[in-house]
Image 1 (tube, rainbow, N blue to C red):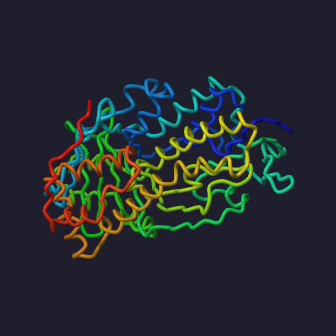
Image 2: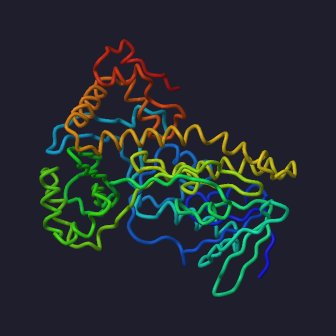
Length: 421
């Protein structure tokens, strides 16, 4: 089967599907090839940050999310294991209307995007199609080959987009050098019942311990529990009751919630890694999302940054098609626009891994001291929140800020915040 289109996208994740929808609305034809057999299933935690909400609103998708599928959350409390509060992050500090996080049921955002894509772009998404190789002519990428039901699919395109995740075969086919770092810690995700009112997120930190509890719609709650990346089988071997005991020691006030964990079918495992591709563009090819810049979930921006990539790339591609120029030079504007924020978020997440995941008592003491200092410093708290919310491109901390956050220097500007109209 031979096809011809303007853009072929490998991967129908959050970035790939959003890109396809945006291109279609600009009058640029596309085809999406997705290896999975259908829309995503299974458990995964999802927090839709303010920049993601704003992007979905601009695409007229936010109002399509079922009201019963998400819960607005304003307050995120950071606590020591055992319950002592260290710091409270208030999303109400942000400019309206995106002054809260949305905790969403598994895959709802992704499925909403896919449903809208299929409505507006029927026949342009092919599930169950495995990418095999890129096609080149005179050193330039001009298309791809894939396999669907043992049949070869050949798609000719002006631009090939790799939106196929951290282990991206497209990135390999492009020949782009990259560094993949696997963290020592990963996460167990669980969906729990909330027997009492639960409206504010709780995040417990301790010695090599992190437990996040996030309220979800329908009297549900997500639990995110840090585990060593090689420890999942041992955790399961100890049994659900042992895990409940561990959680009760960390957050005793939520013991009734933990009792709702009955078996491992309520859980999922999320590995963690960071990808740094040397370049995101080649002649006729682009990488977006985790294929270009996967990051630790501490950044709380993985899906958001893939969607921002998609809308930014759509704008760049519109200009490329207007000029008839799909060279690496023309495509480079996408990377130049996006890399600054992505690099900052990767670095911020790695700093949080260093301090939050630590088993070192000195680093743990410093972590808790920074949280406690920030709790009384609205300026620093706001800067960190703006980065987490995806509304800031530069680091929330300069060197003086770091000394002030650690409590080693006074901050005469502690109460200075921007005025939102």
